[in-house]
Image (cartoon, rainbow, N blue to C red; front, top):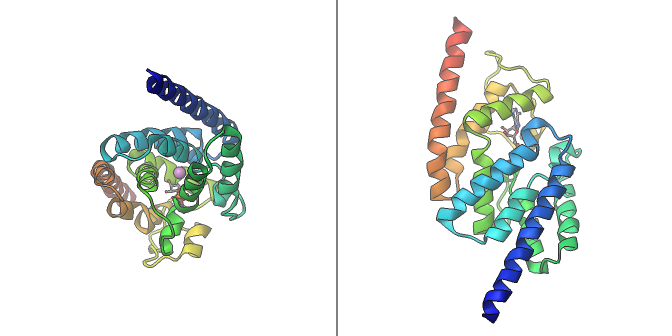
Length: 226
Ligand code: ADP
Ligand code: NI
């Protein structure tokens, strides 16, 4: 009975923390670019939960990590890669969360981004792998296509230029500059994500989305050539 009451107490406390975090993120991302807004965060949260159903992992950490993973994306903060982790840590410290849990979530936020895949990975955990798969799934398929064109529009990049070939061995700095055509971005990143999934469940969910992007490209070239 006693353990039951204690468990219920922690469960309710965790629910409150998740709700507080949702409100915090929603307000922070109010004016975010449409590809990295609160809706993206909610999709990543849902996908992370779906993957965790099969893969396990600590759901509390997964939910908080997913909610906070884009709280201050470096590309919208003059390339500053420390802003996001710092804001997340500060917020989590107001929520009565054990230090080791906070540090794990901060490490997830520091290491989740695609741009870090150009470097040797410094940290990993099951929770990071799951959220990273969810974030990557939201970058492919129909939604991924929509997001790529939103970001390409935001950067004023051309949709396509047959004279510009995709860069084969992209490095981190060139990737971060994002000066490419949006169609080239498919070859430079999006079509590679299927084989970069961390978990079997992520890999499975990527198949259909990947196929849809290939069909999209085929149709695109057909229309381009008339
Ligand atoms: P991550 O979220 O892993 O850090 P990014 O922030 O680079 O990855 O990408 C987030 C979203 O922005 C994705 O949907 C991605 O396709 C899109 N994106 C990033 N760079 C470009 C680009 N140069 N052109 C079009 N879309 C881009
Ligand atoms: Ni993201």
